[in-house]
Length: 184
Figure 1 (cartoon, rainbow, N blue to C red):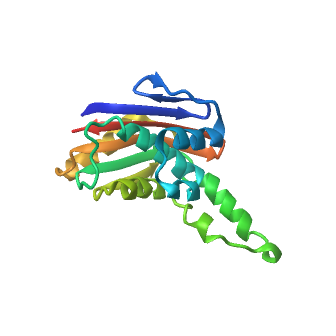
Figure 2 (cartoon, rainbow, N blue to C red):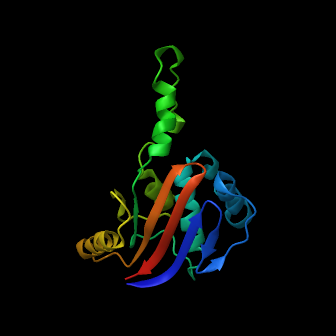
């Protein structure tokens, strides 16, 4: 596998292929700033939870490095990993249902209580029709991640590229993402 591009996002910085992207915000504001200044054009972004926003911004920055950019394909897999799943959003949803006298379940919050929604959002935005998976690991383990990606590639020879990496979001203001676009 060959690395085509890579993106790293922390609560205070963004790098694309090793080059820092100028940002002035931190935490949740950082993702909104990067979206507005460098991406835009996908209004659904503002409805997403923090984990999906992180995955979307990281993947879009990653894919904008691809020349020509591939969309509407069925040969690109999306395989992401973290340790907390969608716990930050699960906690938010729990607050809406925990008290019988203040019960206000929100479908807009509930929809993001599965971490694989991130891979779905990326696939939908780019019209990909291939393998998508989101795996939870006890801790970050690059070797396990590599083997999971390889197993996916071994099981489907039509896959020619993969968006993969770590997307962890413990709260809207505490997150990290390290994604790579790999060519098989």
